[in-house]
Length: 239
Image 1: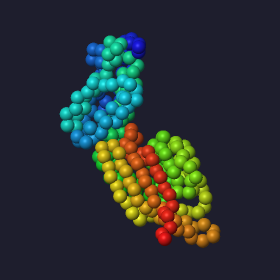
Image 2: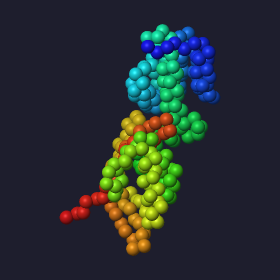
Image 3: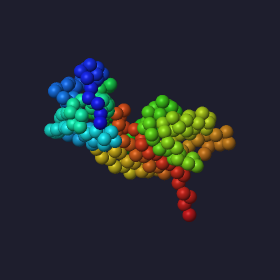
Image 4: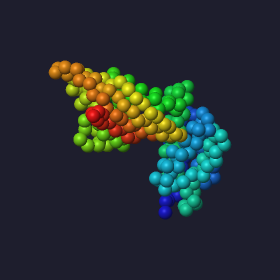
């Protein structure tokens, strides 16, 4: 059973949550906070993401939801008060809320949250064509899956994905991509795109054009929209 925290540990834990714009407080034997999101959809998405996190942690909040407002109460009932589990979940929930509200870039939260799937695809295309390795890296989730156009196997993890694109950019082939088809769908916290693109490269042997098909899956996380899965393969030859 989790151990109850003493008053000093509770005060220290609460202080670690206190930054401008946050509302965490201890009331009785519980840790409480409230958020006002941009709209109902964003609030519901926060609760969906937080529920997934709570399930993984096997520690569940008490909460209420009214339109764009969410109020949460955290307490470890088995222990009869506050434990480290409550503060761990509080930090995880706050990270999700910060990402949704885009507190690091005040005023851009609506734009970041409201990006449609086509805009997310175009952001990836721009980062690729400008060979911005940092931007490419940030497009992908830490545990992202990538099956590259010419790759013999699927790779996983942002560091490995970064190396994959670094090899492309460092090859000297000056590869550029353009969209030739796109079908997209989206939900509260997931965006999916299927389509086709064309790669044009200029190796020393002469220009090369490759048509390929793709699928992207984005998940909204604490750092915003990030690619969870990306598959790309050469378009079959027409017969």
